[in-house]
Every structure is written in C-alpha cells, then in structure tokens.
Image (cartoon, rainbow, N blue to C red; front, side):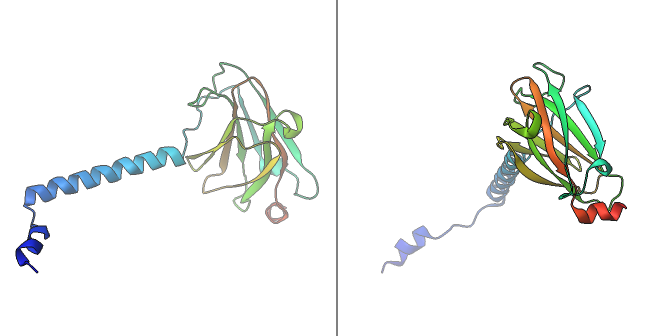
Length: 179
C-alpha cells in the first residue's frame, strides 16, 4: 500500500491560534446549549400577582385519608398576574411552619372539584420555577418543599374563571410530626 496515500489523511498538527479558535467555539456552543436547556426545562414564573394571591399554611390541611380541603381563586382577563405566554394566572403560596413537613398532595384544575383543565401551571421551590403544561383535570400531584418554607403554585388559563387546588392534604407522617 502506498504510504503517501495514508499520510495524506492523517491529522495535521494545529497551530496554537487555530486550537484557541476551535476551543472558543466549543465553549460558546456549550453555553448556548446550556442556556437553551435551562429555558426549556424551567419556565419563568408569573410575577406581581398582587390581588390574585392566596396564602395558607400546611397546618390547616387535614391528614390524607381523613379528609381534604380546597383552595380557589378567580383569574381575570388582562389581570396583573400573567405568564410569559399571556395566560391569566392565580398564585397560591403554601407555607410550612415546621421544617418536618416535607410536602403535600393536591389536584390542579378549574372550577369547584377541579373538574376543568387549566392550560398550564408552575411551581416555584427555592426560587426555581418548573412548568407543567396541559395537565388534565383531577390529577393528583405530590408537592415537595426544598430548603425554603414557601412553595408557590401558579395556575394559569387563557380565560377568566375559577382555578383550584383540590383534595389538599398532608401525608400522615408529616402531619403527625406537627402534633
């Protein structure tokens, strides 16, 4: 076999400037991909909800299996609480007063009993906003606290009406720790 033919396809050593330019573009590509991933995996929670907010403590929630409670709020078209997509939102701030409480359960939806489907909802835990799109109605979620004692839930829809957290309860272990 011809050695000249093989040597033609072997890698040639790079000069230092070419290597720096390649490395620069690799880093730039990594930064762009990281930024794209973070904006698709994590949303931008609504801000400035003002009068469209309800605050409550987990102490008021019953133990799961013994009963549930419901929280509701009304969203208005063109309200002060909107997400980046223009949907009207309502903010629920659920506070734990004892760090032994790790979380709670709830259904997300529209109307009494959460029988309607909201377009989207967000959770904010420790300043990190997560997006959940088109979740259906009467689906139960397990919300877990992080380091912070506040967990925010924003329920958003493109119309006005009532949005709700239904079947709210804490699990027996966390509630017993409060007693």
